[in-house]
Each structure stands twice: as structure tokens, then as C-alpha cells.
Amino acid sequence: MEKQVINTNGAPAPIGPYNQAIKAGSTLFISGQIALNPETGQIEKDDITSETHRVMQNLRAILTEAGMDFSDVVKTTIFIMDMNDFSQINEVYGKYFSGYFPARETVQVAGLPKGVNVEISMIAIK
Image 1 (cartoon, rainbow, N blue to C red):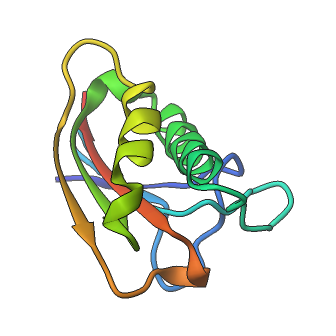
Image 2: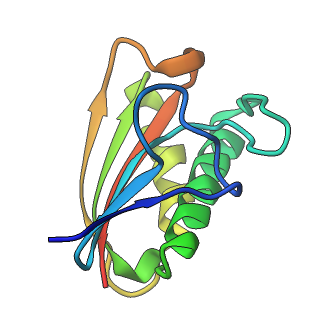
């Protein structure tokens, strides 16, 4: 199976030894994205709603670079610092999908990179 590295300037550059995404055959595995603005290099976490929008915009940029969109997403994982933010994150997240929603789990964690409140990874198939 052929593997292809997917990287775009529309999403933050990796901050470690990984890629934004790997496409293996028709499946795209997207690394967890945080609210890092790729243009400014700054974390956007004024509130959980805007932070989640920034995460979803980063994910969209990677999907686009791979020739996909949110309708191709089959699985997501959401990592959050505080389960009390779940309803606001869920509301923003839901706006990016139409039709069928992907399978998903949401996990509260003890810490996330750069002190963010939410990180989301995705698997998409086209």
C-alpha cells in the first residue's frame, strides 16, 4: 500500500516528529489538531467556542489538501481538558458536518499540548 504525506500551510506545522496527515490508499489519518493559527503561530483560545472553530478550520485545511472534506470523515477523537466544555465543543463540531456524522469518542485528559483546551484527530476515507 502506498503512503503519502499530507502537509499544508493552511494548518499548523507539526511541533514534533509527525506529519499533519498520512494518506494510506484511500484512507486519510489526520494527526490531532489544536487551536494554533497557522498564519500567526499563536494559540487562539479566548473561549472554547472560538478555540474549537480554529481546530475545525485546521482540520478542514488538511482535508482539502488531501482532496477530501468533512463528508469523507468516518471517525474522530476529541480530547478535552474539561468535560464541562463538552456541549459547546459539540455544538461547534456539529456545524461542520451535514448528513451522517462520523463515529466518535470524547475523552477528558489531564493535559494537552501548549495548554489548549481541545484537540481533535480524524480518519477520512474517499
